[in-house]
Length: 368
Image: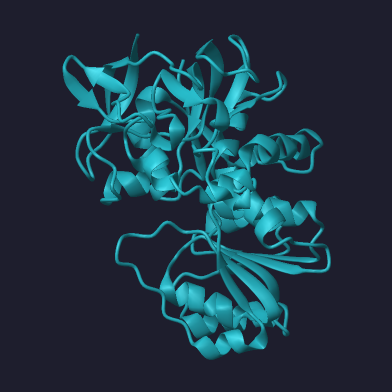
């Protein structure tokens, strides 16, 4: 079948809406008519930097829509079902078998490689290949081929534009707080970088009733939003040195912050956060940085039992975590609606620019 897709043809170039021919769903696959797709900084990172993704490529990995057809072996969803799409995983490596598909041995190949598991290219324009299967979906399009493993059934009462970001950004931020750091009410919590991932982590801290919740960002509007969504304190880090950030955190909690999530990947910022961390505290790094990025820390900082950890997709298995997090949303405990700003599909480049400039926190494309 044919569909409209936003194609990235050159690194750093804008997306171009073009018609492509999409392969039919094979075994374990399904065809989804997309209603909405969130834009994530991972998409922008691939747009800007060489990350092993061949071009031309259709990105997009926070899709939500309606199942149109299923291949052999797909049993948990059927045509007509509303679904959210997440990341791809193989299902049989040790990490997948132990319910940690985010650390799948084939994660990079399946999510960034541009081809289907059998090596076939998922889209074409005439005889010319168009690479895709990005995060098992390529949802910057009217339709996508997804997999049973990365497709999660969606209840009828959650709008697609609010459901789509659960596929990656919200799962990553919230999962890091709930799963990786196991935030509890006794903890003080800080998020460095108040974008959609950081604010999702903050919403988890709000849900867990953390007594002190600090938002750190250099954009005043985002700090105002963080306060409205539950932050007890805000730090404008614009122009701050690492030592200044550590002092600002310790001015709020003199013994240091118990749990910190960093979404910036900036060396001085990470160092400042680590120096503002409490003894036996934990700090998680989530940023996908430009190739060659290095972070310098004083290793003596870790001697107080402090832990610096990385996490992928919030240490979450989408088949169990997304329904659980949607349940928190439906119960009024995870209200991410203020993060979402919708755009028509044709406005994709405007949406990317607004996100990069801080004018939009979580842009979501509406496909119809």
